Image 1 (cartoon, rainbow, N blue to C red):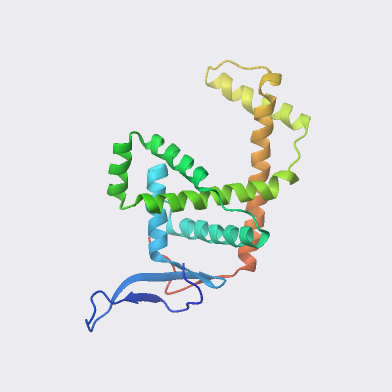
Image 2 (tube, rainbow, N blue to C red):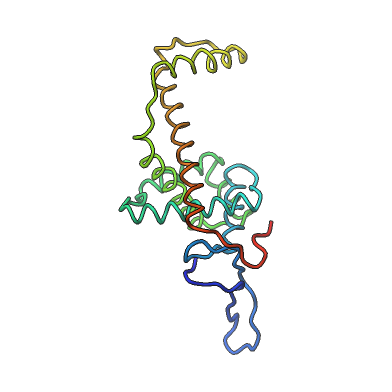
Length: 212
């Protein structure tokens, strides 16, 4: 991302001495003092194909990029440390294993036009997003014993019975249920906070906004 730009197109000289310029990127939105480009939208879409097999609509990708920017800005202001390289590498290797062998992973990156460096950078952003929101909102979430019991009886047990799986005792899964409910609480608070922050940092569309 680049700061302080309000123009709709970015251009570069392809060969020294050429009289013509060629457009290589396009600004689609501005949030705060930062712009979001079409190439960032496209890159995120390719990464989503790597993760989930498909990319989200352009509006959802723009929303995610804005949320990443908000979290990065807030994390910097609060002094929250970015993920270390060891954590990034661990997450990168886990992603590689999800795809299959190292060879299959490299083949998929080539098909999508992604480099290892780009994927590591995107992995780092996602780690920061998840960890900062957990750090910020986990202390606010309190899960009562009754909530755990209700989830066990009304949600977990019926789901296990429908799938024909063994039903564990409440005591044996209480900690897991607590974590599920805690994460739901974090997600709700994070979504509300991000909505408020998007209102504070007005997002302005440029040049017609993002393209698919």
